[in-house]
Length: 127
Image 1 (tube, rainbow, N blue to C red):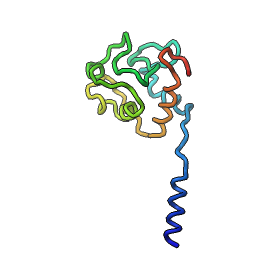
Image 2 (tube, rainbow, N blue to C red; image 1 turned 120 degrees about the vertical axis):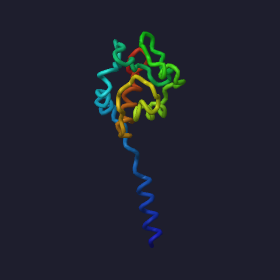
Image 3 (cartoon, rainbow, N blue to C red; image 1 turned 90 degrees about the horizontal axis):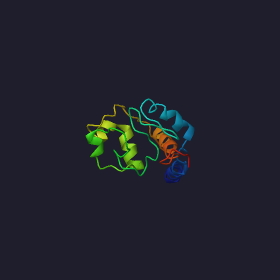
């Protein structure tokens, strides 16, 4: 009987779907980034570079932005796992980066932010 109850509880736990991404929450989370970064059509470099077309882009490659040497020589091409690690603690992922943001620790907020950022192609158009 105990095994049956344990098995049922395990099945129920595994059957719970992962939380869905919330692009609107991702947009709200992006407000933490907005002081330094722009995204979308007409975005311009500010304190930080534009984030259009971030995923698949080589770090330190936006023309006209003065990146730190640490960022330019990081060898990073932005993909989801790399971005997730970076956004949790930018200075830990790229020591010497100029980015002063402390990071985002909540995994759901990061999921939502990723979904928001992925909407924008390199020209800032929503896909």
